[in-house]
Image (cartoon, rainbow, N blue to C red):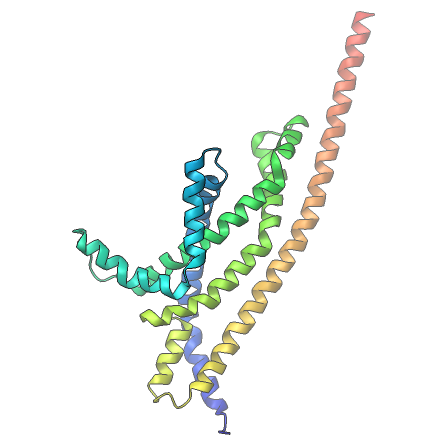
Length: 258
């Protein structure tokens, strides 16, 4: 068994950390664009008409059945070729663009189910109840609907971010110098003699990030649960106030009639 060179682990660790910003960039962009796509797909799947539901179902099925690496290669190699053959003149596009596009497509599929489930959990009855106690549409959305939707979706959002951090490491296969790409590129310059150290350094980078994200979202979930209870109290207070106002009106009417 060969000796593990701890100095090399530290060297690769320090070499990869500055490129963490690239990883964070495509995770943030893919998450944002993916949830925008997810909103559209969720609306299609919740449509009363058959055609939009079929389109949404086809999108989700195709993305779920396609491995991320295959879709990444199709996007990176196939999309420019299709555009050029269609008469579009495109120059050199950075690999980061294709990575963001690929994972936005994947996040769009998973987030559509997250959004649809969150909307169904909240339901229209709570909107109607909020309007009944005197809340405006904006107040009902901010105080009642949004916290519950966010709370329902929160664990899945955290899992999606962790998924992007891990699966996004495939970006090195198309030449992107993110954390993994740069560490392996550095190791290849030394004839791959210290690949074990390189992967250990990557583990030290990825593992704490995943744990921190998991703990952060667990903490947010607890805070939202507290906020939900406070919001419920506000609604009950407003309901009581509305009831008292109605009783006072009825009392005044009865007094004027007598």
